[in-house]
Length: 358
Ligand SMILES: [Zn+2]
Ligand SMILES: [Zn+2]
Ligand SMILES: [Zn+2]
Image 1: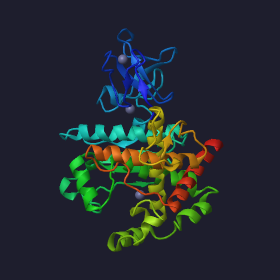
Image 2 (image 1 turned 90 degrees about the vertical axis):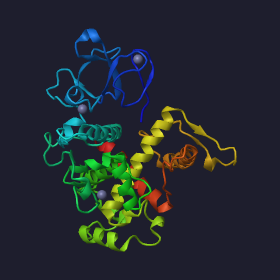
Image 3 (image 1 turned 90 degrees about the horizontal axis):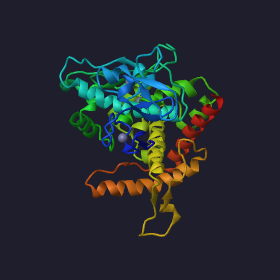
Image 4 (image 1 turned 135 degrees about the horizontal axis):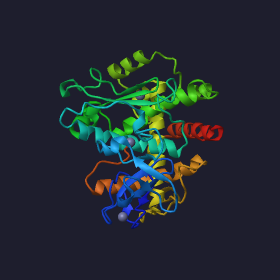
């Protein structure tokens, strides 16, 4: 994630900031230019970009519900920003606590949309294109029903991503993580995974990549329901780590693709943050370039995948060690085998190729 600073006082900001805590100006993110801009009080609800004539208004979810901090060009007919206009069903806001859970969801969703914009991935709403568009629904069921199989299923179907709102509750999410014996479960991880299914439909299904994708990820025509059923009843193969990034990835070729896709986004976006901080690591304990990293390139624009991987592995070792020093679990509790790296490279190639075509 890019690092932003306040256009008025230069204070460093987080992507989610709505006001600058140094100068007090109200802020908004403009997805068209990937920048945070400031609101000047005398300009009556119009945000301006320093050094530009462009003017913006708040997304409706910003001024109405305070769950968004993105902006829309001033004279755009759209009331919602590029991220919010993808919403199909939002939580019932009459129910106490739902607005907070929804806010948490939207924060993570915007990080996914940021990555899609950075990678120039096709992105359109169902209003723009019913068939190929993307939409999100945030649905809830009673906590008693919250289990992986008998509830609102988090998943993807024909461009429609459904997320169980309970995933925004840390206690519920941790309970599910434990029940599923997963090393990592986050909302952003869900968004990245489900977007993988969407982009499989967009970039692979009817493309020249389909056969190559099958060569790398296996046969996606295998019965999906049966495959998941056998994954849940029999568990993964003993040596799944050699072939798959997670045990769930071993359940079906589509899940393998979606898991690998999610990891590609984890890697590129975290490297982006490291690049923005000019992060370098050179462990004192060893003298080997294999453990050193100096992220001095924009990973979203990087064409050479070997550079991405060469910097990612040492970065995760440093990141995990920092996390452990704070008593947290590993930030990235995964091992990338050579087979998994080859799968990630395939995802990278598909994304870079569609940039050229687009
Ligand atoms: Zn400021
Ligand atoms: Zn919005
Ligand atoms: Zn999936």
